[in-house]
Image 1 (cartoon, helix red, strand yellow):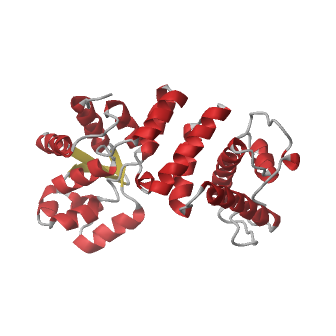
Image 2 (cartoon, helix red, strand yellow):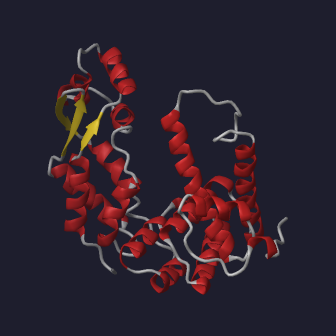
Image 3 (tube, one colour):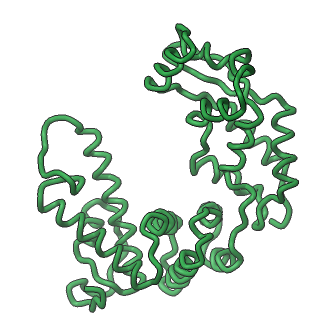
Length: 297
């Protein structure tokens, strides 16, 4: 798409802002204490918000109005590869403000409207990344490797700020090229790379692959020590849900790590075993991991 579909984009974001937001117990307690009200929703009414400075409004409502990846993905069909221009982004915000878009807050059995200040809408739109361009080299690779929802998801990831660093962008292009050669592109793998490269900031492909191997090894050592998180070897009867969630995240990360390593013919038998055990890895392996040369170990 070379031009934005501003009406559809505005409607999509407007619906997102109108989604009901649940106030957590911690936030509710802070609102009750700070504003001396019986119900935290009373601190979010029009009169109270109008008395605040813009930075106070933003600070108060930002926990409720921060878009997640699903919100960003919903906007992608209406965005050009180059993103919105500053003028178009300002126009979008102005339209939402003029429409008087209201949010909905909920706590326990009560819900109520939230008059969204312009600063909150502006922040939300900015965090959606609608003004960010997809790097041309990445777009060229994506249109060759993906289509449909996978292409939209890849474009969403490609707009992330992590790729502003030249070394990170180069690594992404190398990984996408290798995925093309292996016919193994996946938007999940691209998302894993974005998170991993953002956190670990590798400067070269060798460094990236070594860091991934180190992550896999740390999981292996934590498993041998009886710890699901690699920090403590102790277990008790509490936190079962957290442990289960942690194991699911671990299995997904190991699956993605194995997928990246396989693209570059690098061995990690532990990652492969764990990915298979969790059902995350289904593709056949061309050669046994134990026999594959690993230049990083």
